[in-house]
Length: 304
Image (cartoon, rainbow, N blue to C red; front, side, top):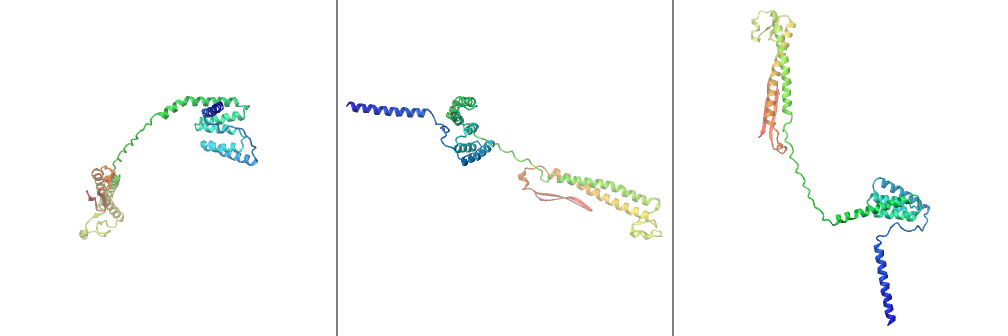
């Protein structure tokens, strides 16, 4: 009876001991992945591989790819576990990622492997600062995790309609400009031509006649096509014919220019009013200025 009871007490004690040990292990939190002693010597191939991995890690770190840098620096540490300085590089990268716990693990492992390092005091201060930051931000993180997510609806602003445009752009004003230039040219040529004609007629040098009346003039010599009689004065004849041509061109330019200016203004004011862009395609109105020798105007065609 006593032996059985003693065995039961021993069994209960064993179970309690195992339970306490398990609870203490769980209370200690996650294990440091960088802790432990280095029990192997790196070969030359390991050292060369570690150098290459360190070079790649440094490049990733400089580009801001800290997770990739950590992978390569861990490869360095796995190849050469005596390269304890790599643990500081790993801690720096973890800190850049905001993972303070793993940064603390790496720094604690560095102190464990190099307790007499010249920067040991600096590393201890850094570990303390990281732990203080963890404790100060823990309530905020908990509150953030427990808070209900806020759903915000994004209202896409309605785009304004495209601004109205003129269906013919600046074409009417180009027509007005061309007409104005023709008016100016006509206003210059007409008085010049009339002046030349008047000069040829002066002092009876030339006479302007019709073909059917040319024979009634008692003049010795006929020069030209029958419109002018200038005797043997070729200079006066050339002046008269040139002036007649200039006057004719000036009159045509004045007529064409006036019609173009008027047509361009009508085109702009009546048919070139701004319209929404979606109505431009449905409009069948076409206004075409027509200009030529002896005729001018604006030709309107299409459907309204």
